[in-house]
Image 1 (cartoon, chains in turn purple, orange):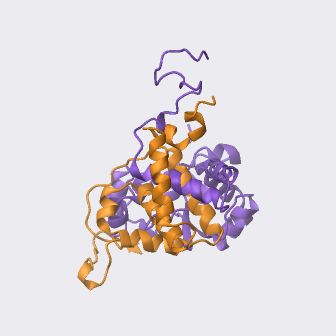
Image 2 (cartoon, chains in turn green, purple):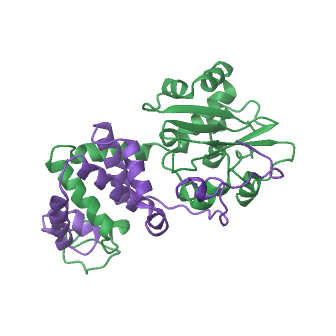
Image 3 (cartoon, chains in turn red, yellow):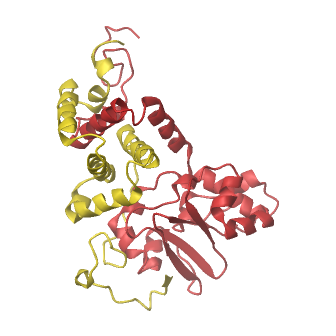
Length: 215
Length: 130
């Protein structure tokens, strides 16, 4: 790209690099603090730019697809299901997921019980299997209300459960995180693990959604 | 916790010893189903938290203490990672990793590099080595 191209945010920067829209807003006080803190940590030898980049890559690589793969295996492999319900951290490690020292507990939905997860005190979330949490998970409204009137909250997500279904809300802590194993949808007999995983949504593993139904 | 919306429990009040962040069971408005893609600076804050805590400079409990001590007003007026950067900074200063003076000086330098995050975060690019 020519360096004499007109200065425009939609094109290239004067240094010949494409603009990144997220970085194009006026610098805020807290962003300024992040830059300063990061540079000091690098200069003091606490970390390196490469280590930070690797950590961000590892974080970006975590997505609900990880959790969905685990759920699909639970649906198709009874022995794996037993292991997940006994110790979800170990079972997830078995699939090659980096769980760290986290204690992960899988709670399985049945005909009678529907599980929902929350962190009322802060924002604990099974991030190693689902990636970073959505904003609403960290909101006052969700944290306050889902433990007291889960049916009403689920309705706001478009989920209406039969009256006879018990709703259990699990409050996470820094040391203990939950993941919901949703019910396998009907009409999925004979589907492969990969096809099943495609039906498992992020919200179905939080409990605020249900898996997709097969086409 | 088990729900049956017919059996709603009384809400403990703050006077009973709850702090502001202990908000489970309180009244609140509808859940706004908002989400956003995390910006680079937010991912960097998250990465610094993971790296610094994994190296023993502070703990998740230290982060939580700082976040909770920041109070309810910060919760209402600052974004999630804004609160995190403030809490991580507090822990690092307390741990003696750097001083507030060093941070203040560096923030001045960063601000002088440019008006946007991209310019301020990339001193070499701003110096024209593209």
